[in-house]
Amino acid sequence: MADRKIISIDGMGGDNAPRIVVEGMERIAQSHPHLDFLVHGDEAQLKALLTRAPTAAPRVTIRHTDKSVAMDAKPSQMLRQGKGTSMWNAIEAVKSGEAVAAVSAGNTGALMALSMFILRKVEGVHRPALVGSWPTRKGVCAVLDLGADIAADAEQLVEFAIMGAAFARAVHGVQNPRVALLNIGEEELKGHESIREGARLMRESGLPIDFRGYIEPDKIGYGDIDVVVTDGFTGNVALKTAEGIARMISDMLKDAFKSGPLSMLGALMVMPALKNFRAKMDPRKTNGAVFLGLNGIVVKSHGGTDDVGFAQAISVAAGMGDSSFRTEVEENLRRLAPVAPVGPAEQVAH
Image 1: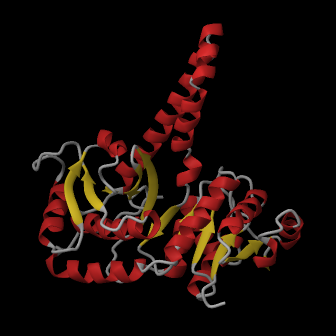
Image 2: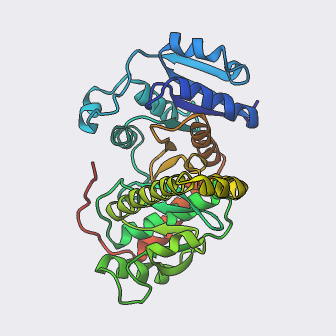
Image 3: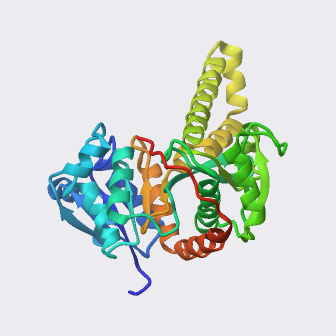
């Protein structure tokens, strides 16, 4: 059928592959009947697992390879030796047009390097960005860059804003995303030169983006901004800090409720509220970061996720594949070009 979408899957990427990969496909297949899967990996292992995935199995095509990318492999090594691996082949299927998007839970650095090498950058994009979804009090927001670059100049920050807004429309369903630059304060003179120049470009470019100025890190969780833009170093530090605090709060709550009989009784009384809180903070529901700015869609799943998280990553890929993301980005990059300054040399994070 013409409206069917094929998602290319790295069947061997991740801490728990290929089992979680197949379980994730089975879960998403039950709610997305229009999706088919092109899975790259060890055929014998995948076929055995698919016997327990009755919904997904008829919609899966396996492309056998006995080569995979190790979780500790260096990106530079994979550029030389990665051809024919399940990760490489999954990305190639996007380049050839066989699939609308690729999903992998494998090595992040290798996935970024191979995606850039195979798909290349969209014309007008200096560096791709890694965007992820963060839970907020009002839903989710998009944050980028989360580590594809070490730094970003003013023009690159505006490019991130363009791509982030398109992502929020495609994946989060926000029709007019509110965009802000992450900064140490909301005053106009706060932040380094790239931040201030990026804000100026955003205001003077005439882009159809709802730019709200600066946002401080402690305000992200309020949910008043839909797209938070920053450089990759800052974004990655913010991400890992947020993940660590979330784990700390969870552990502290568990310890508090186990501290004595009265505490355990109290835990039973507030259990419904705790379950609701846990559901809202469940990282599996926001799993699936996307490499933006490439000539094709590649989604990075967390390597240690379970079937729920991997299914969510596939859902992100499907949402991107159904959208006009690339057209929107290219049109806005053309609008930006006349007002953008020439940026300094680019740096790559590894």
